Image 1 (cartoon, rainbow, N blue to C red):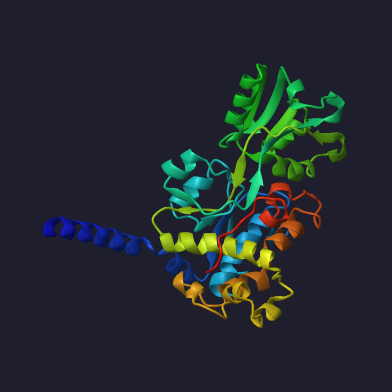
Image 2: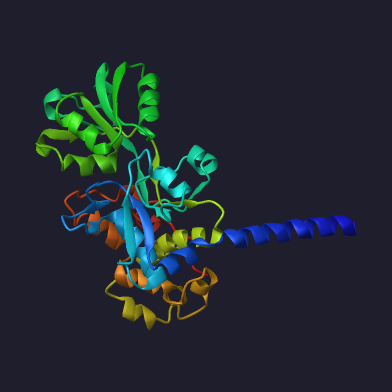
Length: 338
């Protein structure tokens, strides 16, 4: 009996040591002095560089939020633009510290690539965009259509499943990058363009005649999008997922980038734990007591980031839909800081 207990204890100790050995990402980022974040190669509203190389967008904000939590400086980020084909490899080979690039959480990606999805920061679904001149009002009217899509994504399988389930014929015309796919659609090389609906809104802005396009009503898949990290470093996994949870909790508690100072004086237990004036929650994951306030002060809460980049305050003007807080009719929900 004693021997069994010893074996179990040694196994547990070896697991703990192994986990400690691999908990290096936060230290590496600190020693480097900046976070390296993988983003898209240019998707309006989500991650786009200007002429001077300054990146903005919903996914970019999340990278800046992590940097704010660690350095108290949202500018300490190096952005690495990645294609859909290269994004996971770049993370696996430690070319980047975190991937924040409209990537769908699937079972295969979560279990077979050595990666962990930290959270769902945008609940999306795949749809279709067509030219109004095609006089199609439903995806069910696309029998025999040619469909432009991007390789290395979940869209090809979703299209195959949808057309097979509805006993329709189609032709896929696939390209390696999003821009190539969009150019082909704009040149009328295909009848429809398919990708996540959020991307359709963003890509439509790039077309020569955006007003002559329409996004069909059907949503043919579940596309939970979110940031990704490597497996084996639980501390870094915690830092990334709780950065997101802090932004959700802040919105729920009414703490914004403009009310941070008021939150620091609050007597409400939930707000005090978020603000770091009660408990040592930030220190438990290798950060400071005010880690969450750093995020909110520099980047804002989830709602602020959403509306600024892709919601009512942006050109995309995407309705929050499922991405509303659970208390507002949506399904965005974060574990409590306690």
